Length: 168
Image (tube, rainbow, N blue to C red; front, side, top):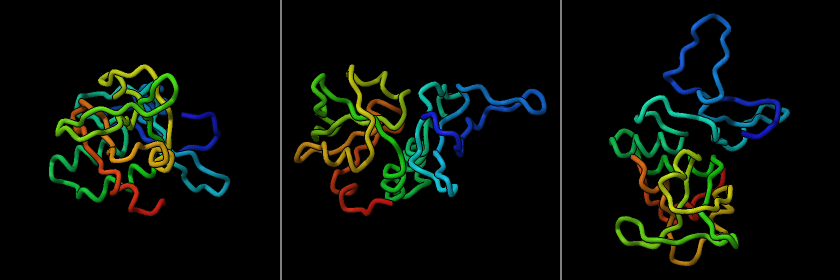
């Protein structure tokens, strides 16, 4: 998370204070939304130091939506606005070009993670922090997006679905 002063933060739901006034440790902060001078939230920024309390704890709002989609508890169209409202990380080459590989169904995809905790499952040394708009600009033709590859809720997002929606 950046160094701005005002944030709306998201805590791991399992964290509970042991005494009145105890502040959560950095590892319990999922991430947050920076607030502008008027209190309006910016894009969600995951905390690189967040450690999910359980394997079923989502790493960020997009991961939560993908998990709910898999369980049949959220519609697929809930994912795009959540992705558009987040800072993402794109696996890139040393030269900064997106790495393209096959999704489980064989479709060519770029690897994108919604929080740093998902990087460990991707064979990539270099990552670029991007918005959805920057991701679309960098996307090679005829390539989709594989969100959180190898994760419990890994999801292939069609580039056209992201492209065909208006930014928030």
